[in-house]
Length: 129
Image (cartoon, rainbow, N blue to C red):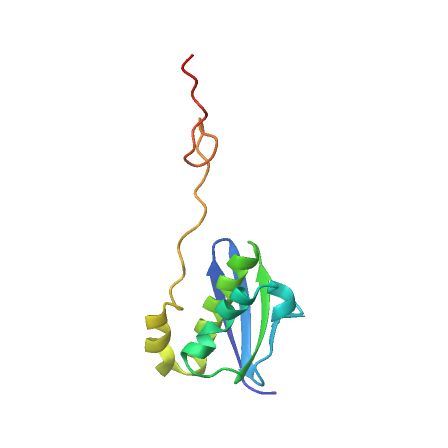
């Protein structure tokens, strides 16, 4: 069995467990091909972007399990996980991936709802008369 690399990626409330091994560039998420899972070309582009950044598209097969969040968050988590797994393959890729921003976990999450408000910041409508 070929060498397998593992990493986890996070974005919003989504987590992606990513296994990377040499192959033909097939990406499988939760047992489905990537195209069938995300169903949006822009999200497919996001997931494949770390491979294009290091100029190695089609060199690795990706098997991933995504948990939590929505499709867009999971795509971001996949991108993060793939980038971290590529570092295990070759540590010299770090500057390229770092410059592209793939190694930084996006810290933006949904702000909590506050009491006395309708949402996080939106207050209730005020009626003077």
